[in-house]
Amino acid sequence: MVAGADEDYSYEATFTISFLRKNVEKQKDDMEKILLQRLSEETVKEIMSLVRSKVKDTDVIEARYFYDEKTGQYLHLAKSWPMRGSTISLYIYKKDSNLFRT
Image 1 (cartoon, rainbow, N blue to C red):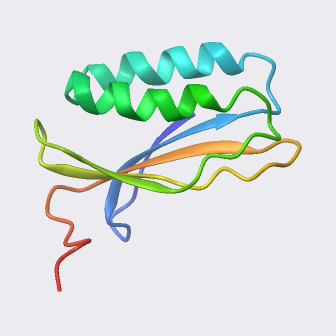
Image 2 (cartoon, rainbow, N blue to C red):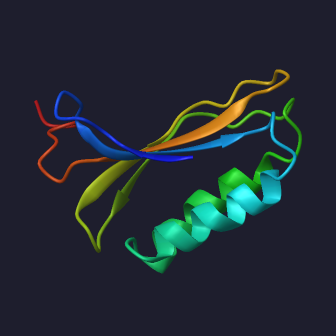
Image 3 (cartoon, rainbow, N blue to C red):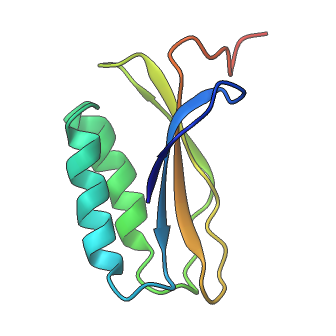
């Protein structure tokens, strides 16, 4: 699932892969294709390496932040917990998001 965020959020899009659906690998392939349309190939490879490491819903992905040089945007891959029906969620923050500024 891909969703745009409303104005109250600091991110412009989210991607969610659900392990409740049978087509998990297709969801991963679709996510990669969409990300490659916008982000640098290096960033997408790094993200997809982690996304593809979760083969079963009981596998864990630890939370991780990325910065894409091509777009100047931060991304957050949320922790994916080891439970039935888990999800993989990726958030793309707006360019003007001051996520790491103090």
